[in-house]
Picture 1 (tube, helix red, strand yellow):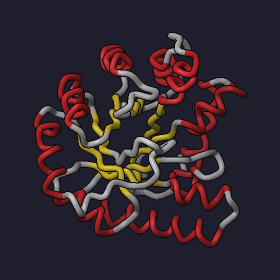
Picture 2 (spheres, one colour; picture 1 turned 30 degrees about the vertical axis):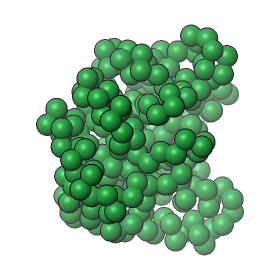
Picture 3 (cartoon, one colour; picture 1 turned 45 degrees about the vertical axis):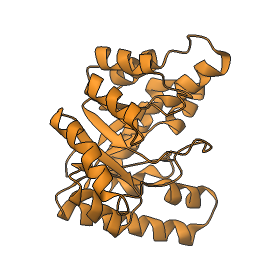
Length: 247
């Protein structure tokens, strides 16, 4: 089984910074620390309202990182232009609503195939790996393949929420859907990633899926870093991932 990559999302370092309107804590410093601690990539979501990550953060990340940058963004003209200017290693297209606290579900690909196909084509031509953030749903996986995405990232939020709320039947059902769709997407020739809401308690069942090549984890790791530091938080997540993978 191949080694599972860990992408660390540093959005909420910027959330803390912006709460006081200062220049610290610096998300780029956190990204470099995560890189040194063994992160295989850094994820940053530039939202339409720029509520946490800023344009200058993306510019500095693109200039300084040695590991790949995964640029999360909505399918808007503004974000398209920013992605084409910086040409990050990967671009992950996510749904976005102004009033949401965090991304609430997967992108509805099947209903907007034509628009999304035209949206991602220039990104692919610019050398970016295009990922689509979707629910574990067969029509969405099929649509992602048809529009030319290289990667699907399966939304693990429903699984994690059910676990932490004690709804174990719902948790197990969602985990089964994730397992099935990881296998299905892989069989279609898509690279499979997963993320959203993963914690030390919930990561191992997903990490054990042989088709999943990368997990993207942020909020939990940044929160855990308050208590044990970011390198130690990443090291523990890495240990759990490797253990689930049999490494």
